[in-house]
Length: 268
Image 1 (tube, helix red, strand yellow):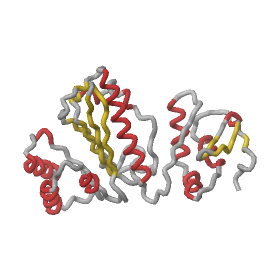
Image 2 (cartoon, one colour):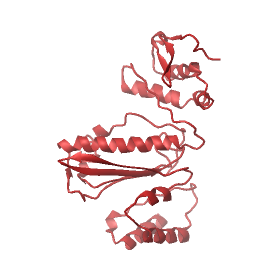
Image 3 (cartoon, helix red, strand yellow):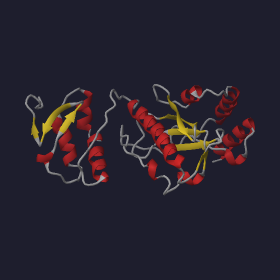
Image 4 (cartoon, helix red, strand yellow):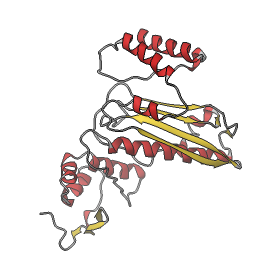
C-alpha cells in the first residue's frame, strides 16, 4: 500500500491532477514487492513522453502479450458524436474473473456516474464470456474515465444512454476477443454459439463447458473435427438436453443433425 500510494502521489504531482483522481493498477509476480526506484523513474519517463496518441500506452502496459490491444470508435449522438476508446493487456490468465487483465476505457461524453451502476448497467450485460484459461490472479482492474470534453450529456434513461452502452459494449467485446486471441500459446480464436436452451444461463453453462474442455481445445489445435468431444463436453455441463435434438456445425460445416453424424463427417 505504501508503494501504491507513492506511485499515485508521484503521478499526481507530475500531471497536476487532483489527489482524488489518482488511480493505480499494476501486475507482476504475486508477493514480490515492486522495484520502486525503477518504477519512479518509469513514471517520470512516461510523463515526459505523454501525447494525445494512445498507442504508446497500449504497448507500454504489455507483459506477456505479443501485440498491443486497442480500439476507438465514434457514436452518433444528439446530432454530433461522442468517442469511446480502450486499451487493455492480458494473455491467458483472464478467466473466470479477468485475473491479470488491465483495461482502461475512456470517453469524451459527460456521463453520469449512475450510468455505471445497476440497474442502469443492464444494457451492458455481456452476451459472451472469454475463456482462454481457467485461472485467475489478484490484480484485475478495469477503469472507465469520462472527460466530458464533448459536452454531450449521457444520463440514465436518456435516449443517448442506450447508444452509449451499445458503443461501450462494442469496445469491450472487441478487447475481450483480442485478449482471447492473444492467449499464451493460442493459435485460434473460437466462438461458441449455443441456441435453443430454455434460459440464457443454460446456454452459457454449456458453452463454457465446451470452451474449458482440454479435449476440445486439443482437437481444435490439431484441426481435428472430432465433434464427439464437443457433444461430450456439452453433456457433462450439467444442463439437461435431448441428444437426438442436437445439431452441430463447426466452421460453417454441418457435422451432426438431430443427434446423428452426417455422411463423411464421422471422427477418424
